Image (cartoon, rainbow, N blue to C red):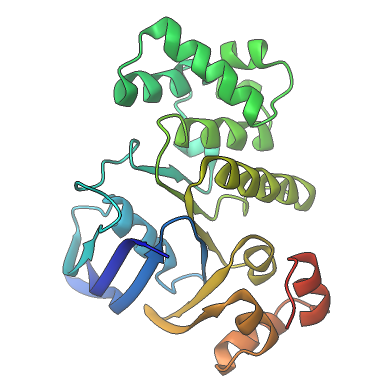
Length: 265
């Protein structure tokens, strides 16, 4: 596979209360074009910091060393155009005073040079693709008029509006109930496959990651501690920490999980 991005010796430190906290320590990782890669780990493991670093969204309080190269692009990536980002809480990421349709259309108009009429037509099409009931009503709806799952579908529609090469979903299902989680995972898988996007799926839930990703990277204390195919990580992990993540899912057994993911140990 051709590399979309290559992360070399990436270290990220935050300045807080007169001190420093190192969130990532010397990360080396390649992301292949068209692959589905999951980053898993407990809270504070550095996985979301990695997502923000890749998207160029780190706060000003951060200090960064190392580099991220983009051999799969002919230019430095542009957020919104080359990288779509789906955040954990759509209630926080969506503008509460702007309709769903306008938020999606604005992305398309900004990055694709469409007229407002063309952008709204594209927004309606995207709402149909994310399978929101009654797309015409959803276009005019404000975020507070939508359920949590509906809001996340709007956020996903906005994230893919400009046809990005890379879609980053950072804990995009953790604020949702179990049934809606499964629906969103299935939606992301379908959209990524249809559009040929590369997916970076950030989660603390190894079961969800296994159902969606082809490879899994395990993070702990800001370090990459294990990397392999989903079958390797779930079926035969080499690190005690990865096994602990598996054991944290009560009753989780590798074989049924691999079967659901269409894999074999």
